[in-house]
Image (tube, rainbow, N blue to C red):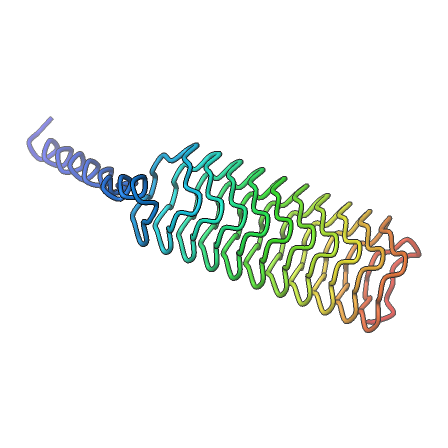
Length: 259
């Protein structure tokens, strides 16, 4: 190997070492501070391994937890307002009553996580995995759930007013008495979902799949059902005043009454 080639290889190796030192370089002092005081606002905990830790009531406002491992962690009542949890593994985590207002949770794994009564107002949950998560009574007002996985999740009485659920997978989700007023459900999969007594007033359900869904006594006033699939859906007593039916697939055929 000539000298020029060896120099190029040496520079490349140095670049790789420098880069790897920056990726996931959480601050060890911040980790110790969190463990000692439970107060770590704006701390750098990116890529940190905090699995099974008891962080109930911790103050992690605006903290960087990007890519952290938080499997089965206890964050009950924790303050995670504005925290960056993008790509974080929170599988089975306990987040009941946690404050996640404006938190970044894009691509986070929250499979089977407990988020009962959690405040997720304005949170970014795009492409996050919330399969089988417990979101009973959670506040998701204005949250971004575009492309999120919510199959078999429990959203009993959850507030999803004006939330973005475009292209989300909500198959077999439980949305009893949930508030979906003005929500964007364009292209969402709601097959076999439970939407009894749910409020879908003014919701955009264009192209949504509601096959086999239970919409009994649901409020659909002013909802856009253009191109939606309603075959096999249970529609006993829904309120449909002003709802738009156009190319809507139903058990009585294609409904074009609102075209």
